[in-house]
Length: 216
Image 1 (cartoon, rainbow, N blue to C red):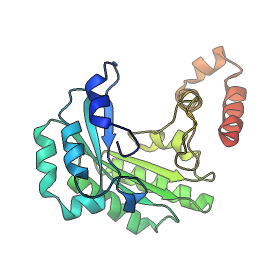
Image 2 (image 1 turned 30 degrees about the vertical axis):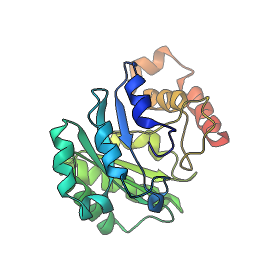
Image 3 (image 1 turned 90 degrees about the horizontal axis):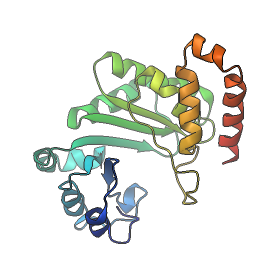
């Protein structure tokens, strides 16, 4: 919402079939929204039938947990998110962050920056552990090194993926993969041996998709 010209009016005019996940990101969290009235606007958005989820920062949930009940009254699911834009915490810290996010919301989303492949592995392990503990989570390793986690994280229990349209030229988080490429890669990973045998080029398509993702 913080990047939209008139988000409430745009929501009023929306007649699409897809449900909407709304967020109104603050400036101190990488967005463009001022703190004054930010949550009020997000709450107003949550009243629209098309809006089924809202994304609220863990820091906001900690400081304003009273507002979460208001969102619940509007029958929307709350994604409580945490971002580390420069590194990836150690495994114990990651596990604790997932637990804190899950305590405040319906889905715990944690996105951290991967400086090397061990950071990506640590994220996948944390997603797997949280899922086994009964939490609904989304785990993302940002950056080029962590890009592949957007494809394989669902295998470990991650419930959400984020991808721009192929035609979208806006600036997004580093390492994001366009929606059609991401869908193709996930579909290939989830295909059975029998399905792969019917499409012998699937492995080659997967490799080509990875190359295109890096170029994008």
